[in-house]
Structure formats: structure tokens, C-alpha cells
Length: 133
Image (cartoon, rainbow, N blue to C red; front, side):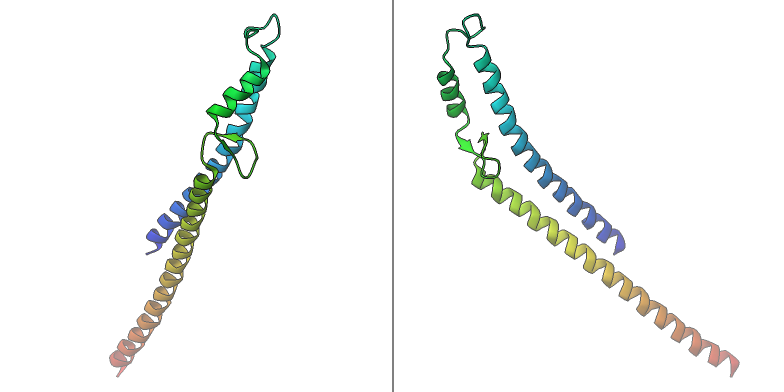
């Protein structure tokens, strides 16, 4: 039972790390998109690699490629922020459920161990009294 509790705790930790990684990815994605746009815009000068493109065209391209804006960072995103938020909430819910079940299993294992010890002491006492009589 304790082994199962440890496994559930491990799953709970993994779900929590996954949620944090997803949140980090969302943050980094938006920042990376803005960095890319800035680099491209810097090349639109007369002697730049993209001198035939105007800066507003880069903004239009970025806007077309990233149709969403993150709810948490207000940065451009490739992913639907509402769906992403649902995934984050589900990961958080599953993390909590696994963590709670793990704790209940540990409590049950501890109670079973106490009951076993009490029963063993009682049996030992009964056997001891039979042998001494």
C-alpha cells in the first residue's frame, strides 16, 4: 500500500511539473515570437536583409501566424489560451487528486500497521498466558 502511495505521489509530482513546464512554455513562446519580430524588423532598413519589407508587414505576418493572445502574459500565442487554461486546470486537478489519494493510502497503511501491532500484542499475550498456565 505504501508503494502505491509513493507511486501516486510520484505521478502527482510529475503532473505538477508538467503544468509548470506548460506555463513556462506559454511564457517563453510569446517572448520568442516578439524577439523574432524585433529581429526581422531590424533587418527592414535600407541595407538590411529584408529591406523590401515594411515593418507593419512583419506585424501583419506575426499576427496571422499567431492568432491568439495569451490570457496570462498578453503575448502572442500559437495556442488557444482558453484550451490551454483548461489543460492547466485539469493538470492541477489531477495533481491534487493523486496527492490526496496518496496521503489517504499512507494514513490507511499506518492505521493497518497499528491494528496489526495491537492484534499481534494481544495474540502474544494470550499465547503467553496459555503457556504459563
